[in-house]
Length: 418
Image (cartoon, rainbow, N blue to C red; front, side, top):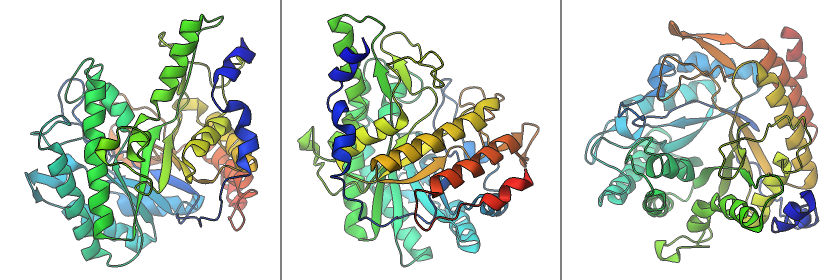
C-alpha cells in the first residue's frame, strides 16, 4: 500500500531531485528566523458571539512587556492583526488608535510586525458573500496602509490580507461554524474571499512598492484508509489537492477571471499543526509521533518541498504549536524536520510560534489551550508564566536550526536558565 500511495502523489518521487533547481538568492526578509504570533482572531463564533482574542489575552495592555520577553529567545519578528471588526467603526470609517499603540510598541522594542488585515473577523454588517465585501475590504487595506505610512514613512511592510481562506471558507461555508454560517457553500465563500484578496493585493502594491504579501494557508496531508480502493485513493488525492486552491487562484493557476497572476504573492506562509494529517472521510488523524510507522505519514520537510516545487517562492511556517505537555516534543520535532527541509534545499525563511501566548477556545472562552510559550492565568490573563520545558526545547531547536542558517545566533547560553 505504501508504494501505491507514494507513487500516486504527483511529484513525490522527485522532491529531492528538484531541490537543486530552486533559487535561494532572495535575502531573508525577516528580522529573525524564529517569530512569535499573537492570536488576533475577532470572528463570530459558532454561537454568534463576537470573539476578540487580543482582548482576551490582554496582549494590548501588556504589549511592551510581551515584546521584551521575546528577547530571551532572539525573536524579533511577530505576527499581529488589526482586527477588522474593531477598526472599521462604521462603513468606510476607521479607528486605528489601538493599531497605533502596537506600532509604537514595536518601534520602542525593535520588533518587526507582520500584519493581518482580516483574521477570520468581518464587521457585523458584512459576510464574504455580501455584494459590497470586496469594496469594503479594498478600502480597509488602503486605509491601513495610509495610516501605517503616517507612522512609519519608509521601509518594507509585510501584509497578510486574509488569513487562512481555505480554513475559514470550510468553517463558515461548509459546517456553519462562523459567518456566514453556511452549509455546502464553501466554494462560494472561498471564491468571494479570494476575489477580495486579489483586489486588496492590487490596491496595496499600487500604493506602495515596499509592500510584500505573505499568504497564510494550512499545509495538510490527506490520506486514504488502509488497503484503499481506487475510489478512496483518488478521493484522498483530490482532497489533498484542494489545499492549494487559494494560492492557485492568487497566482493565476485557476479561476483566471479573478485576476490572479504571478507577482501578487511574495511569500508562502504555511500553517502546520499536530493534527494536519488525516484519513479522508473519517475524521481520524494520523498520530504525529508516528509510533506505528504508518507509511501514510509524511514528514513536514517533504510537504514543504511539495509546496516549494509548486510555487517556487520562499516559505514560512506561519503557525505551529501543540497543546499542553507535548509542547517540548512538538517543537523538537519541528526543529529537526526543518533542518531536514533546509538540507533538502527548501527556501524556508522562518518559523512562527503561534500562539506565542496561550489563548482560549473560540467557542468556549473558559477553555484555555495551554499551547503558548507563555501560559496565562485564566483568573488574571495579565499574568505570563513561561512554560520552561517548552522554552528549553525551543532553545535547543533554535541551536539545531541555526547550524543551517549562516549568520544566525544560536542563543545556546540561555539554555542553562531553565
